[in-house]
View 1 (cartoon, rainbow, N blue to C red):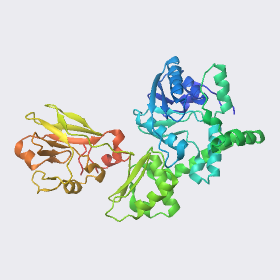
View 2: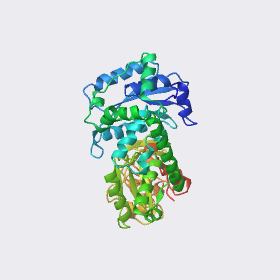
View 3: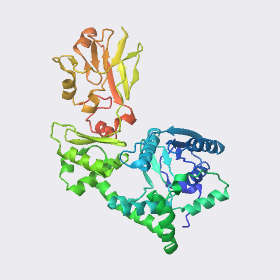
View 4: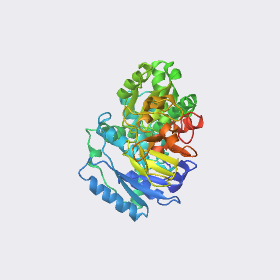
Amino acid sequence: MSAAVDVARLETALPARCPALVVAFSGGLDSTVLLHLAAQGQRPVRAVHVHHGLQPAADDWAAHCRATALGLGVGFEQLNVRPDHRDEGQEGGARDARYRALAAGLDHHEAVLTAHNADDQLETLLYRFLRGTGPDGLAGIAPLRPLGRGWLVRPLLDVSRDQLAAYAARHALDWVEDPSNASLDIDRNYLRHRVIPVMKARWPGAAAAAGRLADHARGQRGVIAEWLGEGRGPLCLADWRARTGPARRLMLREWIRAGGQPLPGQKRLEAGIHALADAAADRGPVLAWPGGQVRRHGGWLYRLPAALPAIPPSQRLPAGARGAGWGGLGVAAGLPAAGPLWLRGLYPGERLALAGRPTKPAREVLREHGVVPWWRDRLPVLVDEHDTCLAVAGLGPTREGQARWPAGGVQSFCWRPHDAAAGADWAWLTATGQIVPDGSFC
């Protein structure tokens, strides 16, 4: 392949709005070349090394990566993860944990760069072919896709591994070798070391042809994305149920992907499809996997992060506070200065009466106001020193709160999830008036 290996390649691969680069830096040959290229550009760069703890030399690799990054004058960050091997095995679990960690650390519009190359693309397509992939799998490794609050970019997909090795030799770069990459017990390694060299000897253009195949398949997938409205907002349950089995599966997969989440494994996806489609109307089925979750509610499917914020302990508000963080929520308040006040969650079985309303179980009040089930346990309430509930975030003062401050008391008490806790569909709910921007439910 004749693609140039230079910093201009990175710039042309990036989305239009990209303030900074994050290089996923394992310390291997490919990512070392990528970091060296990125360091020559004009954008701020930081190298992020994900420490899986799976190899005896993992600590040494992390130290090497830190030294290399500092030597190139770029920032360095180490992320320690614990892969979940239950669905995808060790390799797949490590990959999923790696992307979750990278996504969680992204600022708005930042781009994570990974060093996947043309040989990786060929290897991926062969591996998927041997596992009986569907048309979606033929799209291979995507050059660009959403990730968290930013982007995942693979700028080296049309560059061969030999070209990367030649670049590293010219610039006297140093890298680490993962011994597991040489094990022929691993299927992808067998393809890399035994099958692909034979293919390329007979068909030198094999990697380029694989890249074209992936491009064609992604083009077809783009048509599906248009059919889904580019995946904006929740998925209409009735429309989804109306599809045949294969179309239903494809529609759900593409919608999850459009939200920037990694896909669940095939077995879990199939079980989740049955639960989401067939559960009784009064049930709240969930498709959950390490990379996210899909919940059904009110005729819609919603994409959410894998773990919702834990319910924090009671928290005292400083006098005159206008806002506070509470778990995965941001709380804005316009409160009277008199008396100490606290934020806490609702108790199991707690009853309350909003101003001018009868006393009811708190969960019933939240349900009547359209609070989605997964936030009902996490909605903060405002209490006094006697633990009396004075207001519910987004819903207004209680009877006791109105009696305590009859005129101009609780001016506002609003909430909204932080971006990482909101899920892919929060912006749509806000834009369409399902939820007003301060977190109150219409």
